[in-house]
Amino acid sequence: MKKKQRKRLLAVLAAAAVLMTALFLALLLHRRHEETAEEERVYATVNVELESAGGIPVYHRYIPVDSPRRPGEIRAIKYVTIHETDNRGAGATAEAHNVWITGDVMDITSWHYTVDDHSIYHNLPDNEVAWNAGDNRERDGGNINGIGVEMCVNLGGDYEQVLVNTAALTAELLYVYDLTPDDVRMHADFMDKVCPHRLITEGRVDDFKDMIRKDYEQIVRERTEEEGQNDGKEG
Ligand SMILES: [Zn+2]
Image (cartoon, rainbow, N blue to C red; front, side):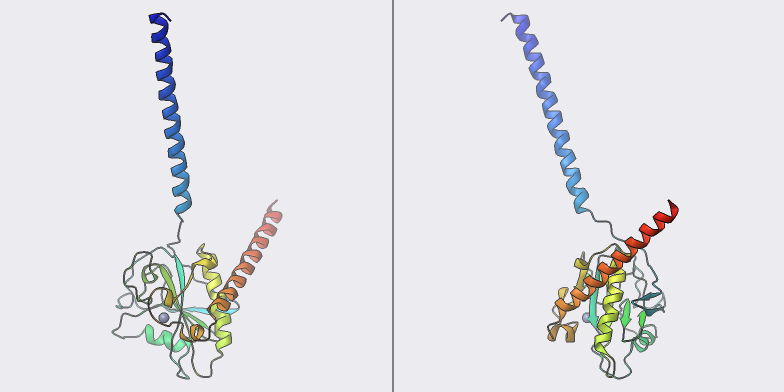
């Protein structure tokens, strides 16, 4: 091979090597981009005021903005966290809890919804931090990223209906905030406390999660059908 030919061949090989490296790097970057796109979920940071859930009215009576119970921090909504009030008094309804939590009490405990057998009270916008999960300011934790829902266990109340109402509310919240039934948590998932107490001690957590999943799937089905019908009308 002549010297000139060899030089040309080397130049071509070098160019090919550079090209291959560039191509490889581009592919690597593309894949990494795809991977992060999968990991990065977009979470809602807005507050939606539902009129009702499962036919049960939702009353929006918020804790005053200057209350220590309402830090007012806007956050991403990642979970719905289920609790029980553990208050067995006959008068410990959702309304009574709302009157108490919106009142002048020097305590920082707060949560977003209280549910009894006939009503749902909304105490705090869903996109605001509330102190209910007992995990302080833990990243991706219950306080910082969960919607706290308290179920009433008041004497004379129909606990089975409370479960039905809470499942309906939770399913609605999952739907409006682009979450899934996998994003439901029990308070006990965030700290060492048996809450929701009755649900856990009766071994009914999985059954309750199934109720939520069924309600959620029905909502998805119904709303998808509605959208389909609207599209048909527009077309
Ligand atoms: Zn709890």
